Image: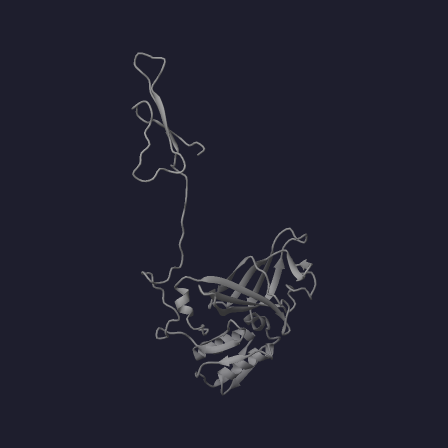
Length: 298
């Protein structure tokens, strides 16, 4: 579990605001000093997938590049901010307390894979990406390779660093074993099979660091508890407002048996402001039976 700021859990279950910050980096250089403006998006986390995290963001068709300058967000060259030539998105989620304090938590570091939108700037641009496991998954062996040694964890670390020499690999497990000579055809398959034999998991955390840690068990403390009762966590709420079945005028019509030229009729219409509770509006004229509702302009 990623360490949370002090008081994060209390703020999460009480009144708070939400902010999302996105920056674009390439080669250790931040390309968006003022952040990337976003209009929406989703992040998916699935521990059953080789690439654990994926992102899809929408941004305006143009990005500000100066006080009076802007450039298309849709990439057309390797050096463009949202290009897919080594650019990465770093996404941070933050809770905002009623006092204005910001409690940030990183939620992902993503390689940009694709940008799509209108070449004429008529629509928003959609940017998609995946977490850093993708680099290792896609770096397949050119020929089968055989590994052996006193430490399975060391072999996993070696396989990651062969693809990303500058990556940080955090070993958070004490589980390890000797590996007898074993041949694999694929890099990520080798990592996953070694991890399974050690009962560990290998993934990239929200900051892009590779982690080798124990698999969770029934004895693993939960990172968060859902409490549906009063004082618990409200996950969702919805409301519907409709004018269905609401009328502001009733019309009453009737007829006399002898065919009189002046039939019984009358109407009742609400006025604004609505009468206070305890007051009544009487219908003038007849005591006939209401028969036809009418929805009229108030």
